[in-house]
Length: 258
Image (cartoon, rainbow, N blue to C red):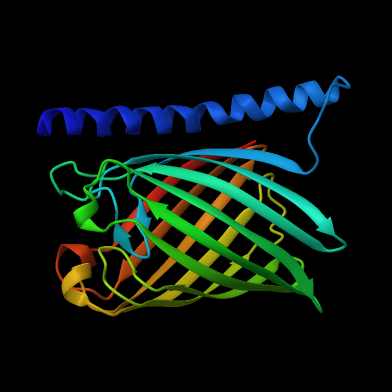
């Protein structure tokens, strides 16, 4: 019985990631139909695929410090002047060293965006799921978020946000995640743009025993460049935890958006 369960999880993982990799073709086909005067849906449909040398979520590896394949699909539409809504799905391979209980993470999300006096506002919900994992592990959870962004100059974007879950990963109770970010794209006169970034977040964990770690901070610095639909990004990611989960790392990601 255990063998069949693992096989099902593997099949699901392959199916989800294969679908994610096929999403750009679906988006391109839809755009081609619209360009030829065929039927089109309102709003914007986009897709993304990525390969990363490690999947770090809030400073902690989700793949046992191994590479990850990722992909997603997003749909957004303006519903009023300056107000938009969006929904999406995103998946990644994962490895928690839990006997292959979970091999894939699939997130479903949606929200609303608008602007107040030059400040961008994004309010939404995210449902994190881990197909194949036993329900007794309580991996799945829901999170609410609010994010604010502001660009004092065209090349600089400042961001702050707050995420909250009433019952976080592993049934670890209330979770609070205030965080901040900055992105700067200086005009260096180079053929390709260079974007510098930095992030900081504080993970407030209610039950350290259930989560497997106490409350902690995470941070990163990165550099990225884009060419047409392709982005190359290198990040240094760290946290203030001890042990193997506290190991800093450099993560390289190549992604494409359609």
